[in-house]
Length: 430
Image (cartoon, rainbow, N blue to C red; front, side):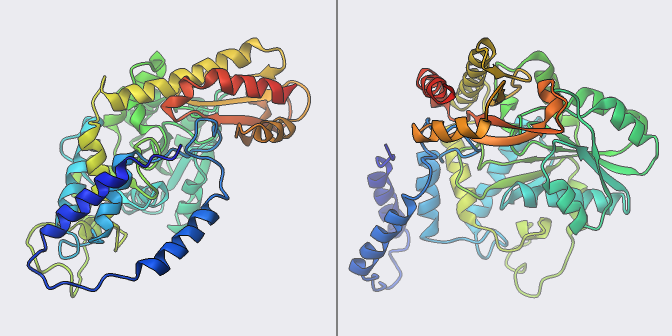
């Protein structure tokens, strides 16, 4: 079940890389016998995990890297480039720029400023840091269903933060946002395109209309949902939100989610390249080898793995970010799987489903009995779901919160496995 076909291909690539340094004196090889023993122990330890790579894992946001990403990442570690400065990662820096430019083009941006990060948290930190520099002391607001990282980051940046209530579908409530904006103290609104709990997409066209009136900075957290820009089977209101994403001031997306990359690989993009002046700093050692801009000069992070850039570049070389292409078709398959599961749940009198999924995340609750019991019974049958606490109002209940079941169907194989998934869920619920 674990993909191993790339091992021979990786060996050929390592030998090809080695030939490019043939003029150097040889180095002694490490003792293979001791390594083999330790690696066998590592493999034994790693078996104590849920089968994240398998379609019967339908719980959290865990998607296996593409074999190309794994192989390219591993190949780069033989060099171990550091994309902070050209001195430490000349080739991988170029690959990062090209990969980031392709992501920006996916959103409709040619001119931009951006780079990879260790993940969505660091990417969002940079975006909110820029917002705070441009609107010092003003408040950051995000929906009550946005990722907790925004409130945490605002605390780190010592910026005031507030949550905007949500509607019955987990999206930012526009009337509540308008009321908050009337106070005049909001510097940045964070719109989430794909919340981590339910995959809900905030109503971006209406938020943009409010920006015209109140002049705040707009940041889009598309860490989870950003790649659905390419999907061809979104509902019309969801498509309307993605079609306006280019009008944001900054965007965050995580290639280590739907982008088929190993952890950690995030990306932050700014529409206006001039925000790069906010990063200006001096370094006594790293920026003298080239007059060309180093990525460390437009990043809050210092050392960053060049291997992440190499893996992302290689994956997009194999699977371009094009509508109608293989990559986009796989996203559409994930959404079809979510719609299929939602339809089955809606027809079953044992469950209540609050709303049709906008992306590929499905949430539901048993009408009677325990969500935790179903979670445990499904796991005993090798179907791994997730549990989440969501507002009772989503389910038409008066409870402040209820424990519900949640599936992230982010593997395209989930569509073909839906009959088996439903069979096990049916048994677990009975």
